[in-house]
Image (cartoon, rainbow, N blue to C red; front, side):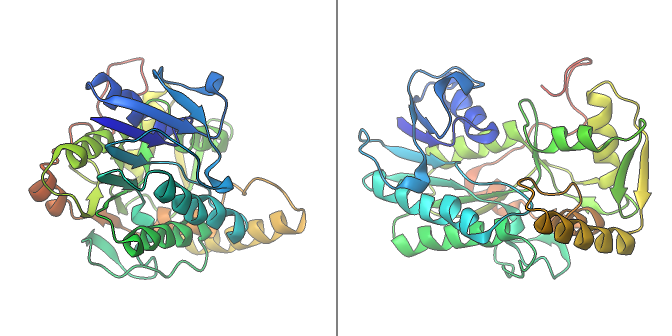
Length: 312
């Protein structure tokens, strides 16, 4: 099977491209960065900024669309350019591919509601403080409006080898050997090892189901405290965590966002309302649909991996 993978110069796209190539697929990759930035060796790579529109590309059997702008804050126009207009460009470029797998996010679910054992038919929206989640929901809507069969995967908090988002942020937040977090650490979260996500992609490419929405996460959820301490230990660090009450953290996040916008800082502050919402509430996913229809069987958890390595 000839498979195009977008976003291959990033963490998720790069890992999935390498995974599929090792599994015997003919993989053609695309990313906005130069080939020298690739973390995983691939046989074919083309630099492509999807915000600039469609390109001429070889005929492919399937597409795995991983390219996206992933951040806590920023102008809505920039998120839409990458995640909505960019998705349109990918649709147009590979309009004859028979399979289309889209990497979305569980953050599209309505964040104003309790999120426990969330099923794929749960309400979406309520993203007034997350342009990322709003634009990813719009990208799903673009794909559904196109009319072609599409498999949408919704992971939550992706981590694992090569992670360029979660762990760098955790490490940067440590102060005097302590990691400050919002809430009390007892809320339960579904998280997604990158290898489990790659397995779900392969199941979507090879299975009999050509269309549908599927939650993707590790087999068991964890508390925020378990997650934070496991990540620190995997990097050889003392697992010292201090918690900031959720209410206080929310107001600090509001102030940090206003301060950042006033100074026109290009990067989001460490603490945002989106982060606080994720860290202080339960957010667990029901995986029964992916298990039943895709044959999804997640292998890794935050506790797995040999000593001295971040993850397997």
